[in-house]
Length: 146
Picture 1 (cartoon, helix red, strand yellow):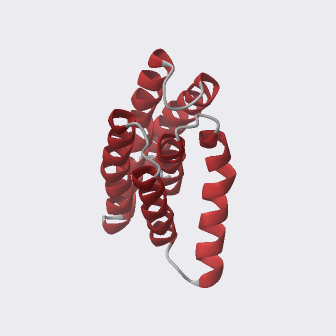
Picture 2 (cartoon, rainbow, N blue to C red):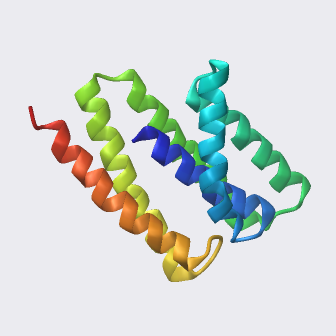
């Protein structure tokens, strides 16, 4: 679940950094590729996403991405991404609950972007809401089933 949160935040950051909403859709396979390459090379998945995030931050700064949207996405990456990585450091059940709640709460972020029709295409925000909320809450429920 933490990987899903990480890729989701990377998609939004990429769209803001390039100031091109469609980049968010490209971020799904792009983020998946980063995860795969990280695993193949022995790098932790979160470190691979971190390297990609730093690259996107540099693109946004050098390319003069619109500051309000870009700054919000960098903050979201730090907040959601940091908490996603933190889920790995706690007991498995607690980490699963935290990751599920984090993913479900990302649905609120998706809703804000859907309503404002900014940063990412509405279709991506809608897709993410329909993925993040049920999957996140489902994981929380599964964490308590033995």
